[in-house]
Amino acid sequence: METPTLYAYYRSSCSWRVRTTLNWKRIDYETIPISLIKDEQKTPEYSSLNPLQVVPTLKIDGVSLTQSIAILEYLEETRPEKPLLPRDPIKRALVRSLVQAIASDTQPVTNLRVVKYAGEERRDEWLNYWMTYAFQRIEVQLATTAGDYCVGNEVTLADVCLVPQVYNANRVNVDMSKFPTIQRINNKCLELDAFKKAHPHRQIDCPDELKEN
Amino acid sequence: METPTLYAYYRSSCSWRVRTTLNWKRIDYETIPISLIKDEQKTPEYSSLNPLQVVPTLKIDGVSLTQSIAILEYLEETRPEKPLLPRDPIKRALVRSLVQAIASDTQPVTNLRVVKYAGEERRDEWLNYWMTYAFQRIEVQLATTAGDYCVGNEVTLADVCLVPQVYNANRVNVDMSKFPTIQRINNKCLELDAFKKAHPHRQIDCPDELKEN
Image (cartoon, rainbow over all chains, first blue to last red; front, side):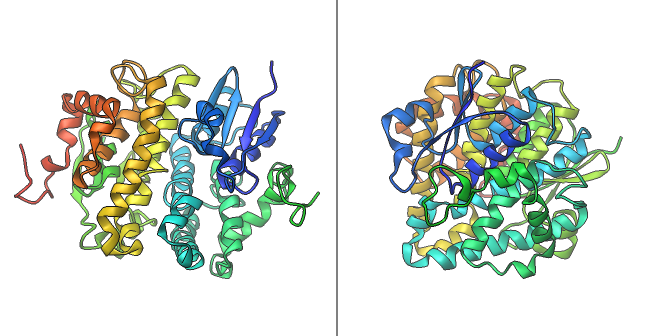
């Protein structure tokens, strides 16, 4: 079987979600960096792989898959070892609710193209406002679902989505002391190899001044 | 078994997604309107059902489920008759990619609270810009997946998500003639009872001047 190829940007939280999941499931993969700063997601070559012109794209099993959450569900369905969804349908719904609270209600409002269009002068205020808004609600939801991780004591797709969002929040100085549950879960996840290896600062396209090993 | 209760707002596209799916799967339900205009999603009573303070919430099987996409997946898992996801994992991924292209990349950027924060004076331009942007990319993606519907010739969750987004686009005069595939699929879906009955103008909280029967 061919090694899967991930087209990703080091700082893209959607790319980080897929990296963590591939690592967690011990799926070897190669990375091809797509620079969002240089608008490489809009080249004809990349657009033919990903008509939506976003990162990531995962080439796997002979196809190009797009949209991080669709990719996570695909990996879960085709590589069920080391599951990232519980078996119980109600618990699965709790996990997916948190996934969407981040992937739909938080990240898209704070991505690069939306911030640009909202006005560069509003950048930090805009990002801080929306991430704080989202974390306030997610913190309340976690009070009813969290154990060691977002839902109970096993790592799930909710944790996979939460960690990159916390990284983004820290970048714009969101006051994380208001969100003790989110912080605790984030720190616990970052002790795990799958999350650590997926960290933006350990990617090949990370600028030298941020790079860690 | 108790009749499921849907807490919804007639014009919320996320509510419409759940209504269509319940109708499609022939699940009887009751509606409790939550007015987003009156901020009823923030009352303590509703917040206790839905800590994220968004619509919809579905009370079903003894629990309150939140986030429309998590609800659709739950209904698909627990009520597999009249499926809205194909069996093949790759086709499921194609459906879910379109679902997320709408549910993550389009709708959240254009919802009420984001538009308010972007500035009321930018309302129409903001909405038109983002929906046009998204439909341009989705139209290209559909060229590779569509048959009668978004993915092949069966109705899927992608169609369930597309139709409410087209309604929103029409409200702000997006030039839909640029998106012939989206228009064709939208019209075909709106011939189906499950979509028609779920239409905002047929909901109990729809104002009289818009109401249809």
